[in-house]
Image 1 (cartoon, one colour):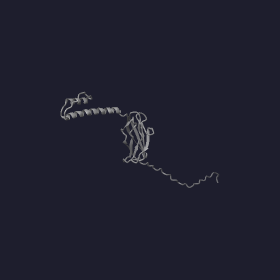
Image 2: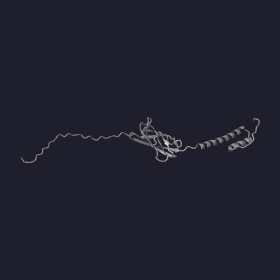
Image 3: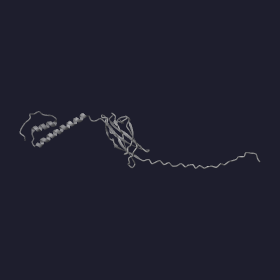
Image 4: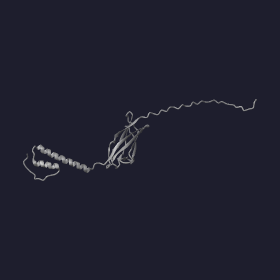
Length: 199
């Protein structure tokens, strides 16, 4: 027997573990969502009264079905004509109701006149949509100018009515014509009243 090292190899049973093949993960189909404006687009807000038209949007699916529970965010500009929501912030996040509608509650205009945009985004089950509404902050027309316009219209209407009444009588009296002319021009001419039998 030759001297040397004897190597003994012991083969133990090999358990084959089947490696799991990576399964293809299918992402759920992301539905397309659309945001439609219901109210508030093109609105004019009163700076003096601090009143604005609250924006209202509706979130719907690709088939036009309303999406309840979508997260909707209204965002106002940070500078220039703009406004704020109830908490004084520039943004408001809310959920759509059963009809898919969301309201930017408590919107108030700031003191800067001009047009501004409200950015609206909606998120529903991984799908996102956006729309922009336009509003304008404005000072109302002063009451005195409005009253003056009404007074001028009333004077013109009164003069026209006087001319029609004279024409309806069928007779042209120089004194009546002069009176109608003076009323139309906005002045009253002095004169002695005349009395006579009824015509």
